[in-house]
Length: 144
Image 1: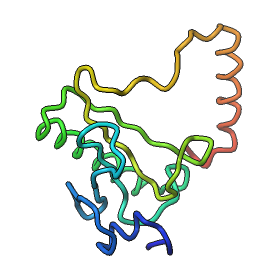
Image 2: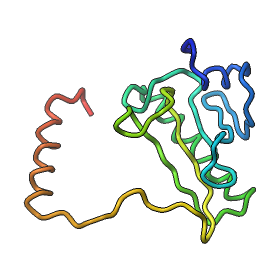
Image 3: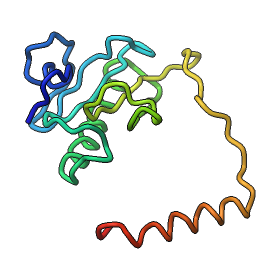
Image 4: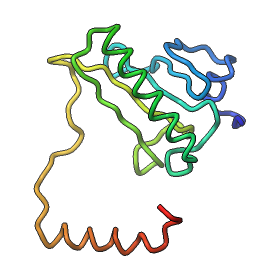
């Protein structure tokens, strides 16, 4: 299934140029056009899916395995000392292309990436209140 106008669907179909570095029956991985580091790669399912929130179990599982395989490939082939894996959903989650995708960014000492947030320990009452909202929200979940 493809979505009209989706650039990632066109890449999967082979009608849009891309530097494909990995492909299997479930996913295609290609170099990001605006890389954060050398080898920054996007892993996308072959089937159009808006984002992780809409993904079936099969798509999510295949994407996780494909992402791991690409991470191993980038470490092995580029000599990366680590990888950062990033995935965004919906505009408020920083998603810009609405075809599910995972960024696999090879890392090297001294590269230009920095954490996008500053971590602060949560107050005990805040953590407890958040936990309660999450646990209470599971009652409407579909068997998860």
